[in-house]
Image (cartoon, rainbow over all chains, first blue to last red; front, side, top):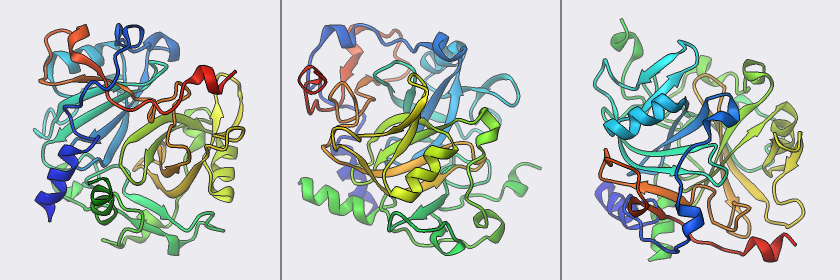
Length: 162
Length: 162
């Protein structure tokens, strides 16, 4: 089943090697994030290239963007530590870039990655988005009963970050 | 094939109704974005609940969050217009909420939606992330040859926004 899902996803629109559906010089001539727009930092959505799961949201500055393209591994700018952050550098759980997308305003970046180790979240979950409020919508109220964990925990952070 | 992909995705981890894998009171007791953290605005990733495609990145303030939950349709805060923005309000191409996820730091939001009309981007594309730099990585250089359009154009904006 798991393999079957993978094959389907590979052949779907989520796949890395996508056909050139249209050809528009003005749209495709540049592929440069507009870092100046938001004071030098832009939001980056990181998505698993295989499952389509959104893994995390982080930020890049120009240096992180260049290092990501030059190395083929995700680099971010850590707002809390105020420094370049090569994700997984110490643990080896890096994010291998499969594709990079840029939005219409060039002020948001999407990375399609292979997450080595299977977990992107420092709390050990596959995705940082592990809490879910599910339907039906509107929910009336957000209660304990309609919030659930929605992804697997791969490691215990207390064991990994000692 | 298309229906088959849909069925697979429905039964995969991207599906809306996900099982409670783990149970942790401290993690699930609250589901409140920390709007104060970033001056009142948080980034929102909007993903098609059916295909898994990331459609757009936008921002919410507290009011947009509350309106989204109360109405079951995506509301954002438009940074350019400096006002609440009910996506698709005039065209009818709203985003019906299927699930809402919150990240580990409660400072990023993920919406799983049904995009009415099929296109999220004001330029007529299915997704705002319609430009892709594909592999292999590292690419060496970003050239015209390795940038491609990666999603369908559903409408001509010059026809829709007259």
